[in-house]
Image 1 (cartoon, protein in one colour):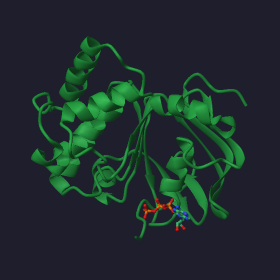
Image 2: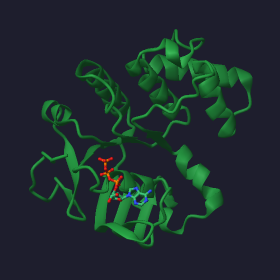
Image 3: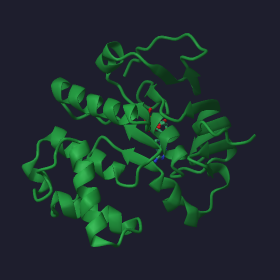
Length: 236
Ligand SMILES: Nc1ncnc2c1ncn2[C@@H]1O[C@H](COP(=O)(O)OP(=O)(O)OP(=O)(O)O)[C@@H](O)[C@H]1O
């Protein structure tokens, strides 16, 4: 199998494991550049495990996965940070350093991913904060921001290295409906500028209000709304 130019993720005949425990089998799908894809399924169905496999946090014992130009099934440990730079990874719990300002949080990631020039770092900081609508937040501490604003900072952090795809695990899970809608719109804006998005969510309202392609983890398999018919509801 070759890595098609247009695909950001191409996973074929994969088995997803948590240790010895098989979670998903026969997983095959492709996400093209600039696509927006939901990932749904009841709790424990394997969404997080699938996402972790894509960014090489779980090994791939069977099958093939090509992500942002990397062969994840063959990836070496020293290549993993480079793979992750091509992905923006966003979780439900914000994972900011609460004892550092917003700017320091973002500079930390820049330094860890090879940035050194202070002028360029400051410019990039302004750009990503502007992109998430929080250009005045650089000097603030995370606790001075609302939950939605903190999630925007996490999204800004994920954009630093111009990822090909945002991989988001329940990014609106802790937020109330209005704030969730705003965060979702931010994902849409980022997506409209060409970045693919794979978003795991339990939020049925988002799916109803903004229909799109859906992958669903169900009974150990991944269904794809492109060619499978299934309910978009999933019991918790
Ligand atoms: N660290 C772990 N070690 C062993 N088993 C795990 C681990 N994490 C998850 N599992 C198991 O793997 C399966 C899939 O879990 P996973 O977290 O991928 O589901 P999920 O769909 O993301 O659930 P949720 O919607 O609750 O986040 C479950 O049976 C879970 O118990």
